[in-house]
Amino acid sequence: MMIMSTSVGPHRSCRSLLLGLVVLVQLSATHRIMMNQRTQSHRRITMQTPAIIRETQKHQDVASKKMQVMLGMCQEDREIELKNIPKTFPLANTIPNPTPEEIAENTITDMVDVMTKVKEKEGNRDPVMNNLMEKMKEMTATMEVNTGIGTHRPGETAQDFEERIKELLSISGIEALLPLDCGRNPRSPMDPLDAELLPWVAALGSSEDGRFHYRCTGALITNQHILTDADCAASANINIVQLNVTKALPEPFAVENYVVGRRIHPSIRGPTDFLNGSNIGLLELAMPVFFNDYIQPICLPGVFDTPDPLALGEGTIVGFNSIIDTPQGRLASLNILRNSRVLGSSICFTAIRLVNERFPDQESTLYTLLTEDHICADRIFESVGKSILLQEDSTTNRVKLVGVGGIANALRSNPIAYTLVQKHRFWVELVLKKFMDNTSERRT
Image (tube, rainbow, N blue to C red; front, side, top):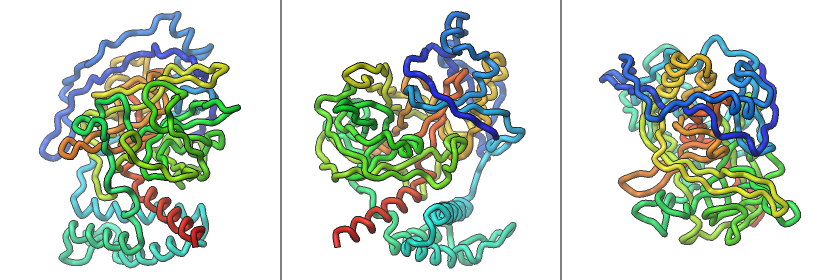
C-alpha cells in the first residue's frame, strides 16, 4: 500500500458525519456473527451541508478524503493518504474461535516475533535478550506445522503450558516490572472513572520559552514511564510531561517531568505502520514520580489475556480538544467521554462495511486497515484527537489502559480504531527490563 503524509490544522471542523453503530450482532454457540439484517442506529445520522463540506474538505473532493486517515488534530499531526484500497483485508472472513491450546501457542509465537524484531532493530548486544531467545527456542523447537502437537508437551494442558511460560518470564525478569498496585483512583475509589481528576492521565508536549505546548495524551504505567502513541514517542518535539491534569492546559498545578528516553514498537518502520495496530510507544522520564492521591500508575492487560474480537462493551476515552495556539502557549481542554461503546475488531469491521452499504457516498476505508490488533470506539475522532481508551474492572474497581494510537477515516471519522495494548504487553515488559538493567548498571 502506497501512502503519503500531510499535515492537518488545529482548527478543522468537528461537524463530520455521525456514523453511529447500526449493527446488532448476535453471537451463536460457535462464536459466529449472525447478521440477520438486524440493524439499528443509536445516534441520528446527519448529512453534511455543502457549506460544511467546503469548510472541512479544504478543496479536496469526497473521493480523495475517504482515502485519508487521521492520526491527530494538532497542526503537527499527519494525515496518512492511502493511494489504493487493498484487494484483501486482514479481517475479511475471519471469525476467530481459538482453543486454549491455540491461544497459548499464539502467545509464545507473538513473543518470539517481538524479540526477533527487537534484535533486528537493536542488534545482538543485549545478553538478556539473547538468553531469553535461547530459552524460547527450547519451547518452540517442538512446534510442527499443520499438526496438533504445537509447542506444548504431550499430555500438557494449555494452563500447564501457560504456567511454564510464566516461569520462564519470571526467571528472565519479565512480567514482574509493572506496579501491582495500579489502576486506583484514591479520590474516587468506588467509581474511579467518574471523577474530575483521572490520576493516570498525562499530557505530553514541549516547553517553548517556558510555555507548555500540548501535543499528545498518554498514561503513566510506572513511576518513570508513559505509554502513548508511537508517533508521539518518536517525536523529538515532545520533551515534557504534565501530570495531575484536571480541566485545561496549561495546568497551573501540574506536576511536570522531562522526557529523557523514548522507544517505539519495532514493527514501526514507516508511516504506514502507524495504521497496522502497532502504534504504541514508551517515554522514559527524567525523575521518578511519587505516587499520591493525584498521581497513580494505570494497569495494563496481562500477557495471557485474550481480547475478544466479537466483544461489545463500554469504555472511557480521554483526550484533549478545543486546541488553540495563543501567545501564552497551546490551550486545550480535557475531554472525558464516558460510556463510550467499544467494539471488538471483527464487529467493528462488519459494522463499518454495513454502514458503507447504506451510505455509499460517505464510504469509510477504515475497515480495510483493521487487524486483530485493533479495538474500536464508537465516537467522533475530532472530539478527542489523540486519546487513550480505558476500561474499569467492575469487581476490583481498578482501571486498565486498553487502547492507544487511535486512527480514523477523514471522510467519516467515527469509529476510532485504537491499537490494542494487550497485544503489546510483552514488548512493554521487554523495554522495562532493559531500562531496569541499564539503570542498575549506571548505579553501580
